[in-house]
Image 1 (cartoon, rainbow, N blue to C red):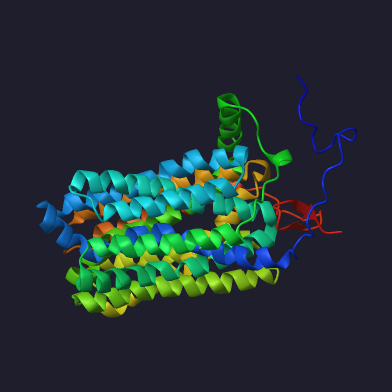
Image 2: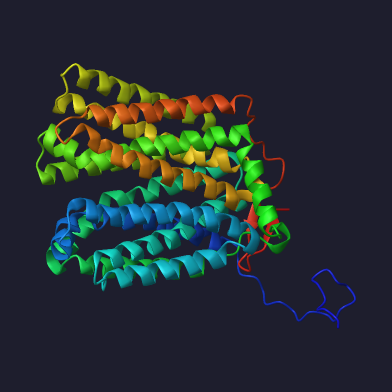
Length: 436
């Protein structure tokens, strides 16, 4: 029995002529918009149905904690999905997993609209979170495949900046749809958006990991990769900085409805505007960060400045709260937290994943899983202080940011990546080449 000749077999029959390649600029133009839409999926999946919580609780005759379980299921699925799908993308490539995951996410979103029980809705939310992980974790790996060093940090910064639109718009869209057509219509709306995302990804995301760079092997190879990641001191420092910085944000997300309405005395509409303002500031900060990095600023330096800003803000607000001096005017200082937040997400992600260029999918998976786990742990703790007290909120945020700052001690001695090779380009067929 003979095997088919390989691509490098010179003795085999000549291959038919390939069609002329399309200009490489087309997929590169569509790549970032596609990755942005994929990054929209988790925040839209989390925030869009928040206004519908009371109606879901009424229909299924459950308390708020029962509905909250559907959100927890999504976050757990998102974390586990990244852990599984990231390494798989290192072995089988990026494009197929992105397309399959997005298709499954759209189908599970549509199925949520027909959920007959809370238990069914919770199970579907887990599937939705697991499949949504494909676009996030594999999307980060695609950036790592196509850019290095400051260029990667700039792309991550742009991605974070643009994806910051989702947390601003998702609750507003969900509120309008719920008010007009009920909570089940939210899932149809989300499914339609996912189908659009799938179409853009189908056209705009080529295969960025050619076969010769994939990792063959089974469980042993996966465990070896995981061991190399978890023993890389610098990589761990950056992912812990990212993870605990995000955990501080999730403390705010979990506590903000009570903090804004019961502690600061804002109306529901005013609280929505205040929440959107924080997301907007983080988005603008990410955009500025991406521009500054693109002009040669050090991502590591900007990361440290961002964390220092966050720590000073949360620590100061904790002190003011303990002194009983917190009011609306003082709480405006919280916007500085979001300025710092916009400086850490893209930079920490780029610095972490550039440490493991041969296992970008696995490196992205560990980062995303840590992010999800820390968020799932931090959120319930915010309820311990009660609805009329902000001490738990600012204490939790301060502790998380302090741990993120300490994690940077692990990165001492890290040398910035210097691009000695020509930048890599993706051709429409999915091949990755270097510019001549």
